[in-house]
Amino acid sequence: NEIKIFSPATVANVACGFDVLGFCLDSVGDEMVIRKTDKRGIYITKIEGDFDLPYEAELNVAGVSALAMYNALKPDCGFEIEINKKIKPGSGIGSSAASAVGSVFGMNELLGRPYTKTQLTAFAVKGEALASKCEHADNLAPALFGGFTLVKSMMPLEILEIPSPDDLYATIIHPQIEVKTSEARAILPKEVSLTNAITQWANFGSLIHALHTSDYSLIQKSLHDVIVEPYRSKLIPYYNEVKTEALKVGALGGGISGSGPSIFTLSKGIESATKVASSMKSVYSKTGIAFDIHISKI
Ligand code: HSE
Image: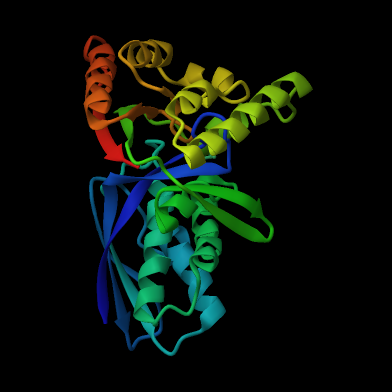
């Protein structure tokens, strides 16, 4: 009647795939306990971690997605949710998505899996929307499916699983400043030029092809973002320096993780990812800005 889960952090956008591409991290995530109860309703009973998150289910991301599923299924029971929040809100690695996904994943397991992962993603979109003021699934889908996912369509929700080359690693640095997704979306232009659109979809198509064919040099050539990065990089201190240093020591490429401030890079092999981590660290070490750093196999 109880399940303990690890709900992973994720990197959305992946340079050229704004709002559609994402991948899952295996080294960082929230821990959650979901418990089936006789008392009906959804109750957040415990929140650990140093954050001021609400206990009212309607105001909590995990609670909102749980309520969406609960109201659709109307089961003859209720659920308690405990959240041990390990992913900092506003870090750019899918903190709200991890909470939104964790509650519905746990409930679905306890109920004998009435829903598919795509249906669970649709419930979780409601929780994610509470946090980022907009419905997007590029963090939710990789948290539920693992690996790389592509959100082919939101209406109806359609998710594709994209393979990862065997030796692909991500290095993520999180400078400890907060960038709100809603604010990082508000600064984006509503329209893009045809020239930029052509460059972006050429890179995006190539990146997907490179992931399917394990072509590391094509991954390297495709990891560029001409649409979003020019605006959002201004919100992240030392962004260009971090990326330049990482590329110098062999990163395949990188970009802003989700809406930032985290920065991700991709590398072939753990040795390269570790070297890249040291170079990224060295930039922030000189600035006095505190940071965390993670390496994950994708
Ligand atoms: N695709 C979303 C954005 C992800 O970049 O705004 C937010 O984590």
